[in-house]
Image (cartoon, rainbow, N blue to C red; front, side, top):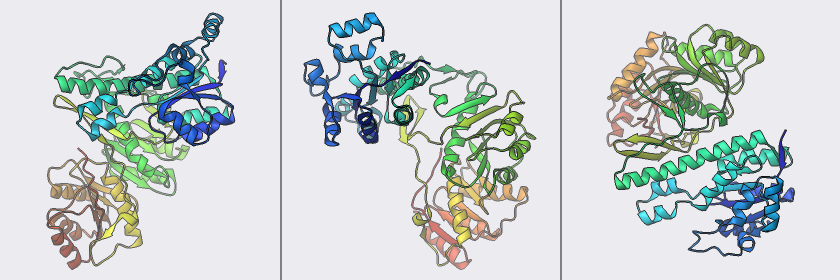
Length: 505
């Protein structure tokens, strides 16, 4: 196994969050650290020993910091193969080997979201950082590249558990992540310039898919599935599979630390979700939410799938099943059907920004990461929810956040009973949720209701109350909020506000 021991590191990071632990681990291993500018000052402020890049190159940081690391003594140390000819040249020109490169780029995308000042945006185009990433990644045979703070966990593992020695497989995987980081960064920049100039171009790298949403549409995936999943078996993931898997992971990220929770999704919407004391019971309750829509769906669990659960799953047709792990018996059973995809998810982390192509450009926004807890609820009515209703309201509010607007969710005992989503009228969403719940035999008396946005009129709470629903959660904020409050007070219904809308288009 081709392992390399890290003896020297170059650190150049814009965002200093999370770097403290890395610096300590490197220092403990007597790794020689090179840095410049703000990163150098930060390391020194934390008591770390750092060697200035300027002392190595013989040049100061110039042009208002635009040129710091762009020098043969830096890039030679990264790009040199650990072979006699290259090492002799390093010795001849007094160039030190650099075994580890840590970069966190200037926040170009964040700057775009915060300002339309062209000069500020241009100054946040990272030149040296991108060059460092590409050079170190090219020489992955000998160099470890950490292209962003999102990869610090990989480096911590190498430093803590492997004494600073890395395998070529680890370095190659990190190089792959590095080129993804580079390509996504460049894509954001070219998109900005194309919008400014009206020029349109295509981005010409990625993984071609069989087709897009429909067979007549071409599609390409840009990203690193291996960083989040281990694909155990099954066919190649399609465009629709990928979109549904993304929705499933985003939903389950709300429940990643909870008791066993299972969800069934179809066309990015959860048609069944439940939390129970075992995975098998959670599967039963989730499937009961809509066993018809579950056909051909995406299944996801936040706990290991055991053989009991696998035997139940195996009786229906599904596209993809996702879990943190599968027991040996469960995996053996579920892999017998060769086309169905098994994904072992490594973590439920999701991107902090989302992108969508519209009109003649792209819009970027922060991902909706706000999840309300009990302390975030404010009581709007004279009646308070019971302890059980409060738990169901939290569960319902997590569910409603991940369904297409307008949406209404009905929940009882941590189980999705019915949902209405993608409706042009909130009343229609409410009626659809009730109809689905009744169709599958659920008793709504004692259930709770969640809405992704405020009620402009009291009609939804009235419809829900007549079905026996006794507690409601909604953002509030309508100029006619009092009409809904008055109805609830007159009909013994508890209602809480979150103050946070969760539209999803």
